[in-house]
Image 1 (tube, helix red, strand yellow):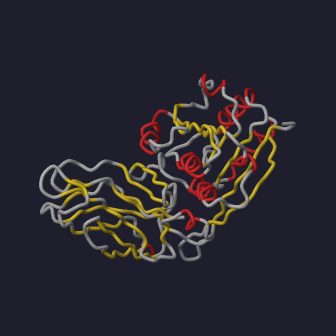
Image 2 (cartoon, helix red, strand yellow):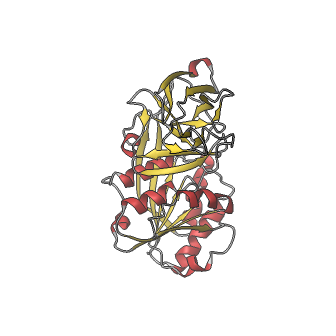
Length: 336
């Protein structure tokens, strides 16, 4: 999977007749640029889509896109004109990812991106956030090339499976009055998709470090009273409300890539199990290096056993590029 990223917030040109932005197209961690050519379309809400060419075969790393504005955006500005949103997407319909079902085709896909609002009547800078849309689910990310607070492949695939009510999902997701704890939630795509797709959830808490709380707060729909977020540091004791709750499921997506924090992750799962006998762990991962296998050794040592495993193919663009896989596991404590 590849993602179109807006490297810096869009800005108006000096004549205020166009919106200018620089984009790149990378993998989820930003560690590999799209190496094949791709036609992309850029537009704002008041104007037509303008084609641009990503020349990945020539080693392109960034592409400037510029689209005209009419000054009659969909929102009202502070004076004359209005507010615009820039949208950049793949031109080819078979490549553009606009719905969760597009993620599960097993073919190469490119996820498009929406900017924050651009007030054409004001010199104020545009917010440093962008939006991904998958049908009814909308997720904000940060701009730029950092890997933090972005959507990653495993979380996207797990969200797509849940949204599309895939046949092979763990039985625990069918339990009534389900209580779910998500660790390392990031932008919150998995937990938010669960809350919007599964009517049997009683409570779901999305947890991460302090720096993720602002984007989580932005992403959680105000209509989802059963959905909340809070700080949970794997290296610290469980928060009191988490410790005293009886959890049915712990969700972990894209959290095993850094082997240095894996011992703390496993220790946190152990602490949750102490107060929630029979709790299961739903893990989604894309193996990026062999050291991630250390997670499974630590889980086995702590008495966690794999009860289910399945693999979801993930197509990749690029000449000679090999497809990738997302692996999904269900763990349960031995004897539980």
